Length: 166
Image (cartoon, rainbow, N blue to C red; front, side, top):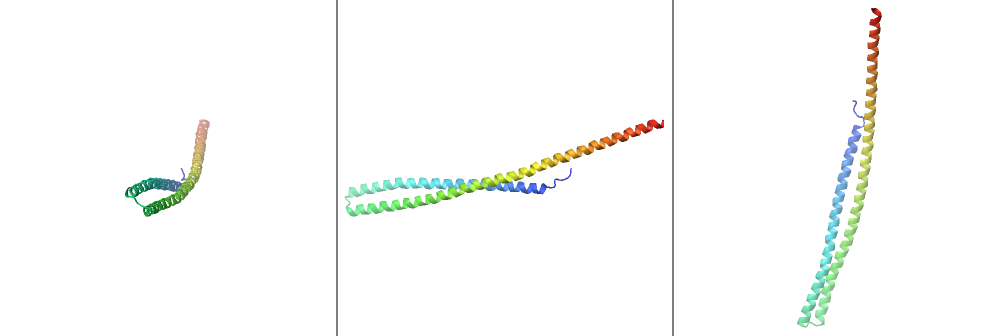
């Protein structure tokens, strides 16, 4: 059988499909990592809020047991405000991380589309190759039938001629 003239293109499309699958896989892994980071940041924020309440309560208990005055309460308010500011910074980082996660999800969808396109292109070449192989087999079969017919005609002519000579 003659070599498939688009074999190189088929190999290129196969490599492109493999690369697209790898890129998609990498994008999915990166997206999952970003989601895990977001989740840990959210848990950390919740933990900070609980700790702040506990620290403020402990500070308040200490102040009341020592008979602290207004300066103690002002100090407690400054302490609580500093903790709230830290929580606000953490919340801001969470919002930024949500943006990063959304971008990662968009990249996953883009890679999924690219992977599907690469698969379609490869499938088209594979279908062309299948049709080409069918055509080659058909042509070979037709040639063989023609050759068999010619052999049959030649044998028949030989018998007819040898029958006329006798």
